[in-house]
Amino acid sequence: MFRFAQHDKKSILRNFSKLLKTGISKLNTQNNISFTVIGGGQEIGANCFHLNINGTGIILDAGLHPQKKGNDALPNFAALKNLDSDFVLISHAHTDHIGALPYLIQQFAYLKIFATPQTRDLAEVMLHNSLALTQKEIADSDPLPKYTHEQVDLLTESFNVIKYNEPLPIQGYRHFSNEDIHVTFLDAGHILGAAGILLQTNGAKIFYTGDTNTSKQSILAGADYPKEPVDVLILETTSASSDTNIKRQDEAKRLAKSINKIVENGGSILIPVFALGKLQETLKLLHNLMRKGSIPELDIYTGGMGREISDIYDIHRYNTTQINKDARLKDIPQLPIDYEELLSAKYFKVPSIVLASSGMMFEGTTSFALAQRWLKEKNFGIFFVGYVTPDSPGYTILNSKTGDIIELGETSGKIKVASDVENFRLTSHSNRDDLITLVKTLKPKTVILIHGEQNGIDWMEKELSDRFPSIKIIKPRIGENYPIDTN
Ligand SMILES: [Zn+2]
Image (cartoon, rainbow, N blue to C red; front, side, top):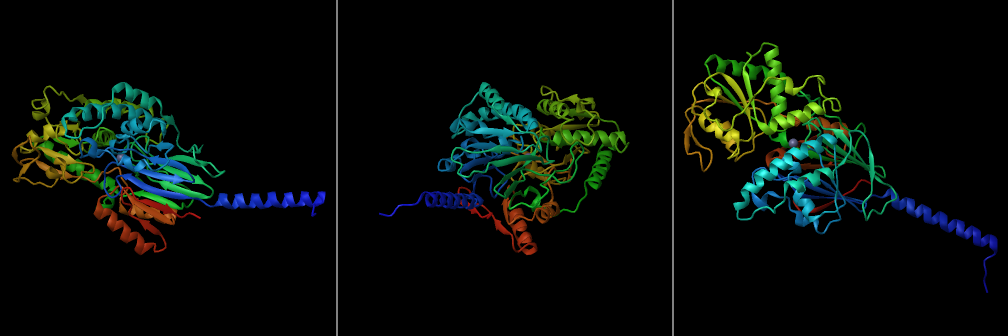
């Protein structure tokens, strides 16, 4: 009978354990990563993306579609049923990134949510407001499931806050690698609290831009990006559809000139804005123009939720990269929009500026109601300062000129345009050139193009493949699973 001598047994065991360790470490260096769009892939819609990294399921954002109603506005959560999900990482508090979160948690209550402290505070205001709006739509044929204000409070209290630049190790329930996934939120510049999300494990680096802005605005400084190359770049393309070499300072000067023209003729200016981000940046810009004497000291009107959000900007001004941390928005003189006297207020008699939401002038909002009278006023101006989606009333106005007859929605009737309509590129998204520079700097092996209009995504695909032929470019379709090679 063959027996191992004692020393042989030991050496065999040693060799076996060495073999086992080599095998495991070899296994550990191989990453198994896949990407799935749950919503908002080839459009500016209900943003929601899923990553499986070595068994850990990560959902990036859970947004509501800005134009759709009822269940159509939700990401395709059914696609999550066959995927492991452990965490939700929220890039920022705009509704198209966060609005579907209550519905996601209704279905997957065990998910752990991570966001910056600023996003957590903003989410509270945004989700309460969104609830008030969506529950009004209950008469829809396919209404959204109900949830309550108490549930919004519980939800936002359950957020785990993660500060900028502080990596956090995570592992999901079915994580099969010894290595954690390190999550780092980097300042995305877009709005207060906005983050680009860097995920690192086993030598693989994945960066999700969220909504990103390289350049500084009036309040926020530009975005901060990973210092080293990444393997995978999940890239937003909101501004990729427009060809722009326009500088922000030049647009600010042009805005001042146009305001002066309206005011000299005794008119007032309506600027449709998102209550989160666009209102605060525009308010600060107008204040800066007044201080420099570029425009006269005019009354500025702002609305309820926007003011609440401005307070959150003020509270967080020392822990974000604001250009002037001592300046508070609440110190800028503003008059409240009186919703009772919306169509008979002083701004129709005395030259003023009204910052009213929504930015796209959706039916039922303050800017929509004001536009119906504003458009008829000769010498008045409607000035756009941000992205306006096609098919919105704002888009119809933006593309109209004096003398045109337009219809804004079922309730507006026909309106003959008498006012001036102008568009200023003061966006909070990186332009085409900035996005291409980002790709050049981060040297990814794979770029996944998301969150853009189809023509913008197509343009970006062509441009990137011409300039960087070795990069694999993915234009993901909803529900399809894309394996990502980072090995
Ligand atoms: Zn955004």
